[in-house]
Length: 308
Image (cartoon, rainbow, N blue to C red; front, side, top):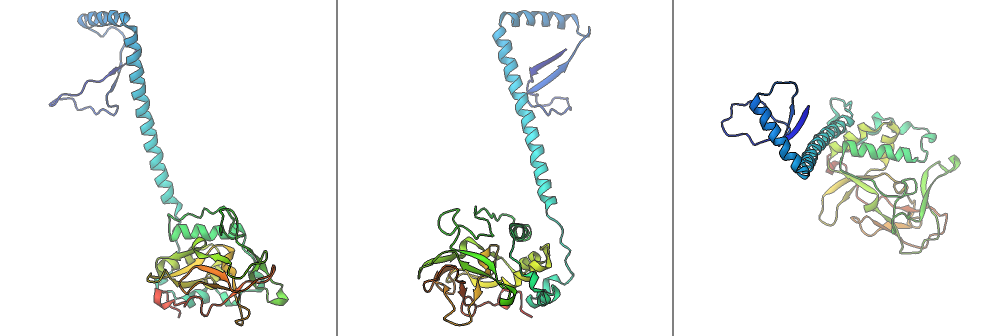
């Protein structure tokens, strides 16, 4: 026989040391002839009272059931929350860092990763999976709260104006005879003065040099690290903001440098602006070119990474 009843609050000074995990609820197990005669008479009288008031029985049973369900649900939620925290902690893999990793310079990354000896076949266009690897690494080792939630896949760029609508260019790899470079080409005619690129929607920054180093060591492929060395620059965050190491994880990072001033057709508003505009009319299929010399004054030493 099982009876659920509301538990009376324990009086101060009670000698009972038995802990109660179900606050306000007590579950009694009984049966056989263990009750005294006085207890039996009390129960019989109580049963007659309940029989005369069936609504009371239902009300008390309903309340007891609700309280019990709430307690079980709370316990289950706490258990799941603990499991989630453990999974998040376990999801962060341990980096195999060299003892002197904090002193690695920009040039050492290029040397140790053998970036100067890559064949032309290594300069392929990135897939969605490749960009996702880089994004996952950034979240794991640089900023756990960062969200890449643009609906446009990184192989097409990002939402330039309307969400879900990419910018007016696409990525393409040249023929090996032409150098085999990856670059950006106009997907349509672009008018002079048109906004072509918005870095606030594609670029990411590193809080310090060690965050950049951890990111580089965390990349699953050394070839990706070599690409990142080519796709890294320093940029001042606004007129009076700090200087930050920057990179990007969409095809917008593939814009190349023009050899002459006549070649250049895309430039930022200023040396601290992330907004790029066309400097002249650009025909469909024409390569988009900028200038690295006056784009942003890349200074690895100033951000603690050091060049050599």
